[in-house]
Amino acid sequence: EDVPNVNSVTKTLGLNDPTKQAILTEGPELIKVLNVSLADKDQLRKINRSSKTVRFTRDTGMHKVLTVDATLSPRDPKAPGQFGHPAAVPDDKQEEAKHRWKEGNFNVYLSDLIPVDRAIDDTRPAGCSDQLVHNDLPTTTIIMCFVDEVWSTLLRSVHSVLNRSPSHLITEIILVDDFSTKEYLKDSLDKYMLQFPKVQILHLKERHGLIRARLAGAELAKGDVLTFLDSHVECNVGWLEPLLERVRLNRKKVACPVIEVISDKDMSYMTVDNFQRGIFTWPMNFGWRQIPPEVIEKNKIKETDIIRCPVMAGGLFSIDKKYFFELGTYDPGLDVWGGENMEISFKVWMCGGEIEIIPCSRVGHIFRNDNPYSFPKDRIKTVERNLARVAEVWLDEYKELFYGHGYHLIQKNLDVGDLTQQIELRKKLRCKSFKWYLENIYPDLEAPLVKASGLVCELYKCKYVTNACLHFCNQKFNYTWLRLIKHGDFCVAAVDAKGTLGLYPCDNRNNSLKWLHKSLVAFQTELMDHLVLEHLQQPTCLEVDRSHKTLRVNACDASNPYQKWQFGNYYAE
Ligand code: LR7
Ligand code: MN
Image 1: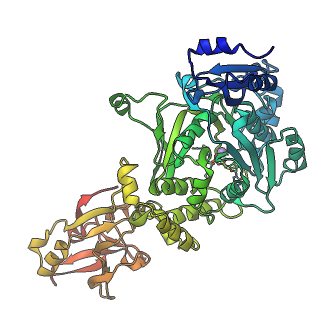
Image 2 (image 1 turned 90 degrees about the horizontal axis):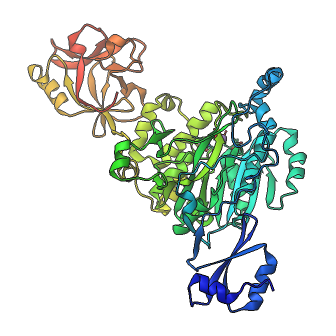
Image 3 (image 1 turned 60 degrees about the horizontal axis):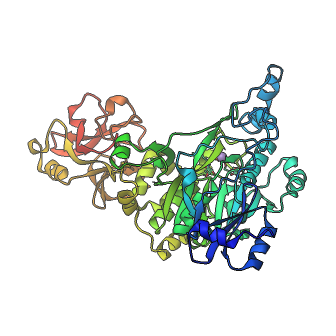
């Protein structure tokens, strides 16, 4: 009786092939896509019993991205913050709201006020809802780690996943509690999540930091793909399938959603400009850079086109689980927070993968000015150490640019820990060089290997001076990021107390080989054109000694023309 009229279905489809697809849905939720034989009445009967709606489609192996969204008709459409609109703190609650800000470094009061399952606008570019994805997408485990996350914000993150993802694609949601101190994140959270069989909570017994916390989640994951999310996000409609589609297409693709903005002040959900790439500037600071309009025009790039990124922001991405482990996961030596996005990005690109932003997948994230949790050690030192680990393993000769831009790092004599395993891994995976990465993946990054080259004597061009000087200048010295004046493996240095000049084997850690030049940290800014020995208390400069026809160092004198130097080429400030 419930069985559709097979003949009429076959006719509508206009096909003789008896194998079709049945798409089973329950409300807006897709339950299953089945290959069915329309001739098999028993099978059809079974299907009809198992779901409310059955649609038959031609077997293309694909379907339109599902618009699963259980929040479409919200329980309370008038609630504050509903539809992603800005919420306001009532006048008599200003003090309370101000007071509670520091619980999360955003407007915690408002987060608690707005529904945990609020509706938000579909911010996808036109065309996204018509895109096709494969029926046999891989399943995914969602991994969300948190430390002392705000209750309502964490809940909203989980609800947004449950409400806006096709449930057959989600194997489980693993919440990794990174040793939070807040009481409500223990029993109350466990209890609350009991209503969702797919949600598992892993309470870590000590603080792991987000990198090792994610790894603890990954160890438990049963899905084909790992999808990492921060714990203060709202996944938008249709966010998941486009990510999984990319991984299905090529297991070495790492897919990131467009990260939209949930305002820290009024909790509104705001869309962002399209055509943004994830990039970094020295010394490895993550940033966004818009694709220039002329490039968009010339290449006819559409808003829905996938964007290849030199680096990812870090928090939100899908990666094939096996591939993640093949890559050696994250460097587990990275601590607490920071730098892991650089590491995974370099590793993916240099070892044969790709990082993409998928404009049809959009997830909101609360951007905050400061981390709301404490760092076990100094925050800055932690991040610097992480970045130095990444530089040492992945940057090859370009690590000098990292240290040159974060110059204090080399002076701190950072202990980056043991790197042998990471270096071994890079060899084992036969990853390409950082030079290859720069040339092929991030050609717009300025990365001159030295700051300047071709030393010349400013006023007394060498030919007027001595043979020694001539010889000296013809050496084509480079001025490096680490402030060495370098020719091959040898560096210019004062070799005795009298100031005699000579060449020493270069050593980046030897401060007596370092010279300041065009540098605001020079002892006095009048010495910008000088070459000033860095390690001496008394400003000491490279000088042409006319009477003895040699080069030497001598007390700096801003007005002494024999102490002024220029390089033929300057590649950076
Ligand atoms: O020790 C910790 N343990 C944790 O579990 C520290 C943090 N965490 C959790 C934390 O609760 C949060 O859910 O880890 C997640 C990320 O920490 P955030 O939200 O403080 O980081 P962020 O959003 O300021 O920073 C970005 O860079 C980080 C560098 O390590 C991570 O990669 C974050 O995931 C990343 N966030 C994003 O990519 C979102 C977009 C931000 C941008 C640009
Ligand atoms: Mn975050």
